[in-house]
Length: 253
Image (spheres, one colour):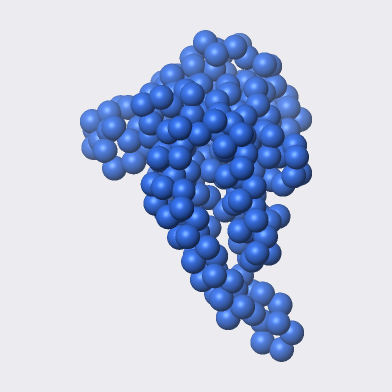
């Protein structure tokens, strides 16, 4: 469920409460006839932190924001659904990233509730695509903070490449996932994470029954599974055919 809205915290929370009421009514209306069991379930919550708040918030402010978010979700019995928050585009993105990850870490520790960071990897114009440096920094910061990370947008293809349609580089979903897995399994330093995110040669990514590798760096199957559970959890793409067709062309499906 993608929810929220508004650049100011007050407008955002008012919008979120209205949306949660709509969700509550929808789930009730979709209950199974006869026994009342719901036929619909919210698997995860995704929301963008209000820009004016994110611009000035410290880690304690982020923690308070997450506690309030959890209270709103608890009101509609969604407190156990993982909540992934997205940082809006900001000039001082490094400061915001560290404060949000610190807040997420503290929220997870103090409440034992699932929460993580959502990274937008593209959009409808070149300016919407984060740099490789930004992507690598997010992966490293989430790893160091123990914060789960999911990716969305712009990941139609497995490997980083220049898009003729967009006239810019697009990130690859293998790049970000392998970077996240190896960063977790091998405790890679930032330059190595960046090199994986920047990789344009699909032959450098190798998958077999025992694990995966990039160049000479390798993670076992167990390490890969562990990283996928707790570090780099998922990605979203508005295209289903392109990722599948490209993986088939690479003989990975």
